Image (tube, rainbow, N blue to C red; front, side):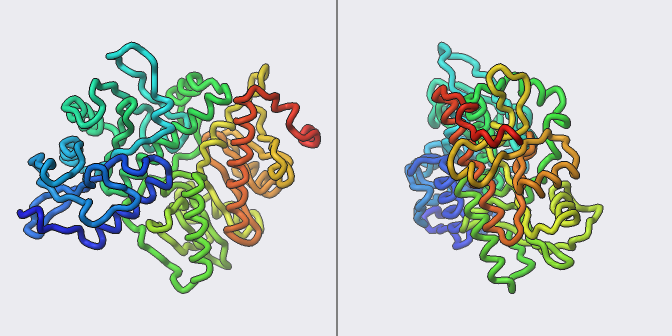
Length: 440
């Protein structure tokens, strides 16, 4: 195969460009960091690797910055491919893996740093959030290497780690992920960084992270709400209501805002709009503008085949007159659900805004345990419009539009950021909370 005659197809180029831009928007890259690779076949049916060029801007990839290489020979030097091509090549030789991705997952990086003498064996990272736990496992390996950039040591460690886990961390350098598709590899990276953000915020709030980790390993079914839907690699182009141009535009706007505002990691969460006998449903609510996700029209009546996620949307509609429902996984809210005021033994079951807009919109935000019954959660949604489920994300409802329901988690994120920032400064949150919240 003459490598220099190969050019990425429009479809592959758009995929690399859109995921590259999304990774920059999600702030898991700097302007030039990281690399992406996929395994495919050439015109003759031979395996090859498509990988981003070294130093290329993943958010602004040009066609000539995708390199075509042998799936078995590391001839990357001549073709200016990533200096970590041999690592990606070995990852892509793992059975069932067709994509690999390296990114600078800042939140996860920060919480996996240590100041121990080197060489050492860093502690494994243990997620305390449901997305991290159910999709990435009960631990993520963290390794220290002497040369943390394209070294032979990395080429041995990383593929071995990824053979059994979807992501792995090289201390001070970043996270490597694998997937059946490039979207799935990106999904794993976003979840890994989100898990780091939950732990980072929890530590800011003096939450007993190690105590929570012990509880997750002792009984995940009691620590978390229902498991999130498995990641589907097919069906992202499905659109059951193309003629509904206005509502389709609203879905896409809301999905892009959920992703860009980090209200939920890539292709997580769900949102829906009620119809007469049907609901319009986006099972991957967090959707970058150029990537999108499935748009489904489904019967409003319950079905035994419904996932727990979809079943709860239907349960809310069956018991209320709400027109929209949104579920997302907000890292700041997950961390805050475990917060305890100094001197208290248990989380308070509510989040009280200390900022002016938050206080104007909400007296309090209820927080319920992971196994709260549906009736309780629906009643609280009726009264407060937004509820945090400890170990289960944020649920919100609206009377009119997706824009209305989107406002709730967006406001909640700011409420949590202000509270965490004030607490980090040593301020007394009790004194800053409105007096009217005491009567809740």
